[in-house]
Image (cartoon, rainbow, N blue to C red; front, side, top):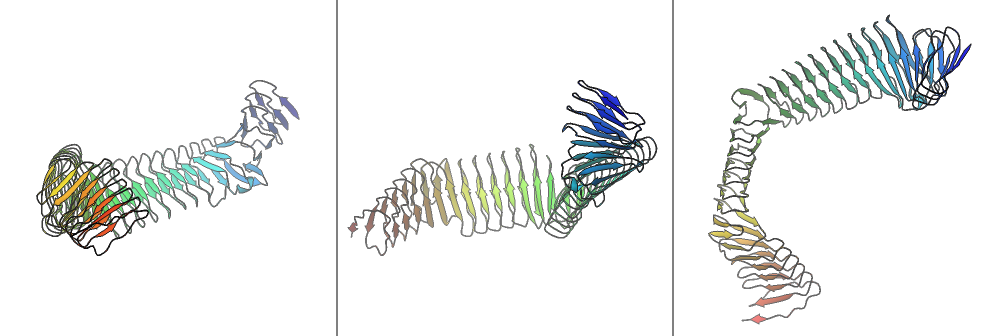
Length: 581
């Protein structure tokens, strides 16, 4: 029996055919037991490498330092290794010899060589230690399997290397990487990462929520019952989501993506791709290339982005070329910085059209659509359905069409027509022309400025020409604003004060007026009005009609003209009542 003690420094210690004891001592040492049986390897303080080679007998790692690394090496012939546990020890065996490793080690690496090797990993959950276990297949056609094994806290990483390898994961979730050539990777019951690498690979997830990456080559990726991420990357790939809410990314070249059950997201990316959602509410995005889309059962959504023109109907999307559609119930089309025309007038589902920075033309379809033109002088047409139109910056022209629509001009001098239906038009900055059209239409404006409403105009941050509105709501801001609707006679008005001392003057109709947070002056004028002082010391004038006056918090003054039928007192109010006949 030989005993070698390296002492201080970075040493390399070799055993021989006998039973040896190797102690590295202080420093970063390398210990090789060599051919004997019964060797004891102890690195001592420092980051040591303890190397055990195939057919080296029965060796034991003693008192490992937390920074030690265990390297197990095969040879150029076909090796068979098993990795198992014996109580709290990890045991690596080649059939004739073995290495016993305590659970205190930090890292274990098993490296095969040129042969067709077999490595089997069984249960390691009894170790109760977070040990990284990495297995390299080498250049042969290897089979590395942890099928059904409960690894506990052990983290398994397998890299097949060159050759046609078969890699099988454990029940607790692993990282499997095929490397070069055509490999087969099968995940276990846990959540795993499967990477095909070079070659035409087959990746099949087990249980859990998995990530599958095909890599270069024409790969087959098969998801599991969980919520999986499948990435074809380079090559003509087939991606099959299976159950769960999956994300499928085709990558380069022409791919086939099938989401199957669940609410899946399919993105073809580059190449001429075929996308099939399957059952569930799916999202299909083509990317570059000439693509085909089949949403399948459920409410499915088509997504396309291009700095060009798009025309959509129920059977096809035209962007210079024709892309076939089936079972698409919703769509989202987005332009770019140029002048884009996005047309969905013959599409029966719900569509979202986003124009971008140019002078765009957006035409909705038959459903309840969302049109957002962005910057630029844009034209928006909602057509049928209850649509939402957002003009954005620029001088925009918007038409709601049939249905109960919402139109917002934003910055710029806009022209907005509600057309048929009960529409809502929202005025912001600019000198706009606003027409409610037929139906019971509402005009809204929220600006931190004085606002004056008549039957034909509304001022605020601009001067608006208005017509066709039966209801109006005006809201002030943080400063002291005057909101005056006394000249409006065509319908009811809602006035909302802000955070300062506002003056709110109602119309001749039945109005709702809310003071806000400060000391406000509220005048109902004619009509059966409801006046709410809210916070602050407010002054409320009911005016003509049967009014409801609510002071709110603070010391409020309530003035009643003619005969008031009903009023409410707020908390802590001082109420002088003046009868004017």
